[in-house]
Figure 1 (tube, rainbow, N blue to C red):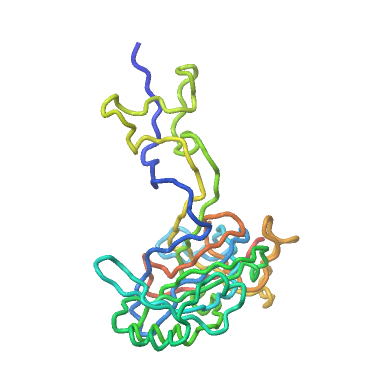
Figure 2: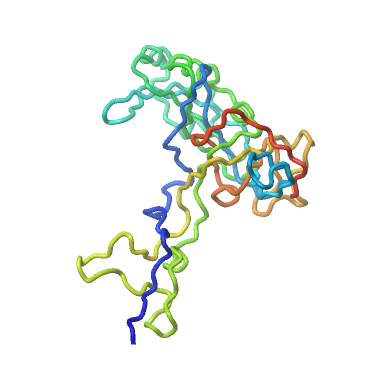
Length: 330
C-alpha cells in the first residue's frame, strides 16, 4: 500500500497575512495619488453601505465581446452625507518619515465633534502655520462625518485625514483654509463615471478552522482522528510550524482596500429622478435619504459600515466617460 496523501491547502490560498482583527471600525488609507493639476483638490470622501441593486446599462468598454450591448451588473448603494472640514494639518518629512508640524482648526465646531478632538494653541495657530509652510511636504484636510446624517443611530462622529494634491503647498493650504468650517458634498470631489478606491473593514466571521478559513481539502473518511484538520503541519526539523502552513484563527473583520470601483450613479433622493429605495427600505439599513452613489460591483464590509472613498491611484484613464444607465432594479 502506498502512503496516504495528506490534505493540503489550495495553491495561493495564503493571500493576506496576518489575518488578524482590525484595530478599529474605521479603515486607514496609507497611500495617496499625486495629481498633475495646478488646482488643489481633496482626494477623499466617505459613505455608509446601504444595500445592493441591479444596474442595467450599455457596456461602454472597448474591445470586449459585449461592447455596445445591454449589461446587467451588481451595484452597491452608499449613502454619502456631506463631510465637515474641521481643520488642516501640515507634515514635514525626514529620514524617519512624516511628522505633524501644525494643526489649524475651524472656529465654530459642533459640540459633538469638538469633544472628540483636542484643541491646543488655538490662538495664533493660523499665523504659526503660515510661517512653517516652507518646511511642509504634505497637506491634509481633517474631515468629520456624522453617521446620524445618514440616518443611523450612532452619535459618535468619524474623524479622519484626507490628502490634498495639486499645485504647490501654499495653494493646497489656502484651498483647505477657505473650506474650514464648511461642508463639502460628494459631487465636489468625484464625478459620475469616475473610478474610486474603497477602504473598509470586512464582515467579521469569528474563529474558523483551516477548511473554512483557507479552503484546505478535507481528509479521507476515517484516515485520521479528524477530517477537518491538515494532514501535516510540516517537517520534523526545524522544530517549528512555518508561517506558510494554514492554521485556524480569526476570519473576517480585516482591513481591505479594493481598487477601481466605478461610480455608476450619483444623486439625491430629493431630486426624484431615480427611485433608489425598495418598498420598506433596505434590509438592516432602512430608507436612503439625501446624497447617495451607486458603485459598480461589491464593496467590503457589512451594512451601515463606514466606507472610505479615495481618488483612483491605479489605472487612471485619460478621460472619464459617463455611463449609459437604462434602469436600476431595487
